[in-house]
Image (tube, rainbow, N blue to C red; front, side, top):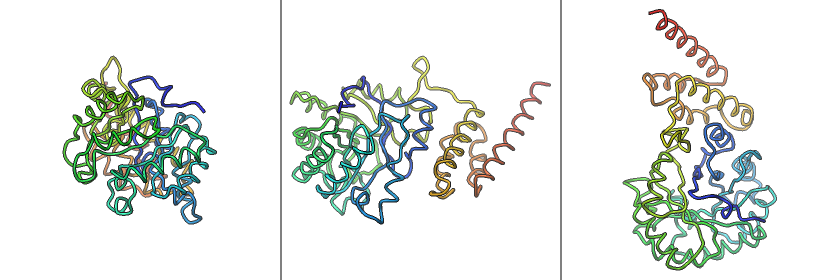
Length: 332
């Protein structure tokens, strides 16, 4: 199997895995604005993949359309045997690689010794990586981690991770205890790159934290020497976060925003109408309805909808009244 990480041209831009956000519908919507170099699935538990109770939830998280390739399955847990078995499933599903989460800061996850709770535990991390490699018949394995748990330990932790057969290491430039608070420590990403270079390793280093747009990412790459950037929450500020025109951000008209929102609602209805509640869709409204006069009030109206029929009716009404305003301006 080819190593997808080796085939990507630098700089690499990736959509971050975000639980209950970056599902197949959202990823397909990002394809309509500007495709990143690589997609990741939602945060998926290996224990759930192997249990009768959790399997129906996991199936939703691992659902993808062929147009989303290349796509990496991101998984978490702390049982090497479960990583071995789940990696077999991931390979059979047709993913391009496996990413192991060693950085999730959610307290319940960390307390279980998973996600960010594995930082510093190179013995168990090694067993997990080796199990995933063996179970998947040597698919490309990467990890997503942080600078440390309570204190920054970038150089020590990255050096240990570089001893593993990893294709890439994505580093969120904060500690576990910092979660998303305070500015990201991008100087630490530079240190991670320097450690990698000093050891003459080929493992890619991907930076993550507070980058909202491609132009910001390019600056961070220039500052740190990282091979790529992962954009997460920034996508909520700009659905065109991965795109530029003449090295400038893409300006989106209100009509285009409404068009994208309608497309998202229709795709969500097609894919999830019978397995996810309508209310789950509302978290995406602010991605499209922002950045223009009257956006807050319009967003409130969308948040007050209760079903697909109501949101389609609201879209029709907004377009009708918008057209009246445009026509009036033309006659002045």
